[in-house]
Length: 284
Image (cartoon, rainbow, N blue to C red; front, side, top):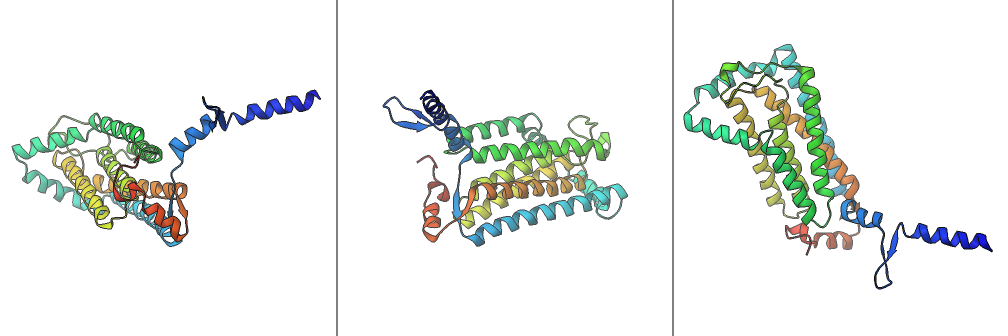
């Protein structure tokens, strides 16, 4: 008779892993389930075609990004093809230098620099994780940013491309490797991934398109800033943007795999009625 009792005790202990008794005696989710629901669970229903299109988009971004990056890298290593644009582009930016524009570019460089940018990313990720219903998207944003940083830190010393001449640098000397650009890729990762994670849940295509256009404009402005200030060649910025497309494609693929479920017409309609699908507070 002792064995069944022990078994019942073990069964009860195991049950607390998934449920715990509340103050009123009612069962409530256990720690792991609460953690899972808070940080991991976030599902949305789409048609099979829409889900397939997301995977196709993700694959296309990865392929285009990798091909573009290696084309740029080959031209840099061989000093031909695309690398021929570096000197003319640098000369064009040099000819347009002006005091007020230099101040603006320096402010932009500091705002998107290695000190301010991590703070912006940290604050955004933490605030989003605290105030959002689920923390899946902020965690994915942080993961994409970390992947981008690791990529730049691994590739830059291996490729070891020289920066433009030191006398062209307008905001202090930087002896580190030039390709790929950490500034450009950091901004591109943050804006492209963030835009996708926010607006992929919306059902307003015009707003989504405008958001990506705005993100692209800021990325191009950051690239122009780095070239103008004399820290990067045009192909540095171009290769970094291609790498960012790879990271964006991976994020879309992971997000689709984890959150998108093929649903019935009723489930899709219910998913579309959620507040986040129309840009409202998702906690309501």
